Amino acid sequence: MFETTLGWGWGRKHPVATGLRVLLYAVVLVVFCGPLVSVFAGAFDNAADPGRMSLYPHDPTLENFEVAAEQGLWRYFYNSVVIAGGALLLQVSVSVFAAYALARRRFRGQALVLLAILATMMLPEEVIAIPLSLVIGDLPGLGLDLRGTVLGVILPLGGWGFSIFVLSEFMKEIPRQLEEAARCDGASELRIFGQIVLPLCKPAIGVIVIFGFNMIWDQYLLPLIVARTPDDYTLTVALASLRSDPLVGPGALLAGALLALLPSLIVYLAFQRTFLSGLVAGAVKG
Image (cartoon, rainbow, N blue to C red; front, side):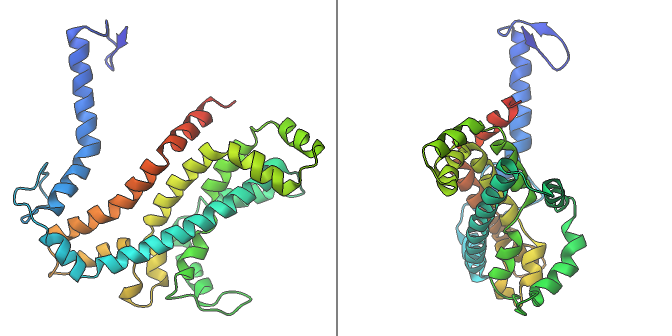
């Protein structure tokens, strides 16, 4: 039986059930895909109007991308790619090792460590903005000033509580008999981690890669704090600053917005299979 949201029960092939199903699909499609299609259409429209939803460019042109390039959006895009790539690699590396220690080892104060990691997820960026800027300006113990550098943005993003928590919970479900059998065969700790535990965590790694990349790519406050000059801006910060520039029209902004959307879409498509496997695995465990 096809149960509708109104609680009516009809056969799946019933005309009313089919009509309601098509209507719900249409509403979901408009709500979730409408803004994306509108951005795509406006980026190629010579008379783009961000206040009006458009499904296709009425006056097709590539001039919007030329104006965006003149404003240095490709340089900002390059900054974003370098920061996102370096920070994601560091974040995944830190997460897998931290999660392995929390999930597969027992040590004194383990609960406090996990609590401290989760506490970092509860503080909004605005609260730690000033302390973070002081630390970046004078790195404790080293006396280094990381403002105006790529490392100033990458290092604070190297550890993310969400990634560590997801991986540690996933690793806890891996049978310990696999490790015991490997140790009986003479496998070292590093070999057990690299050849047994890590391959089994591919679905969870796909999840943290997608969520981690989106978190890093959408960063606004941290790159703004670290930047010394506008040349250090990432694409997200640059788009926000260009909104107040009278020389930049809405079409160029939509072209920049489309450029900002593409990397997240590419990363999702690249890790789509492992991402869905990780979600399904997380739903059925326990």
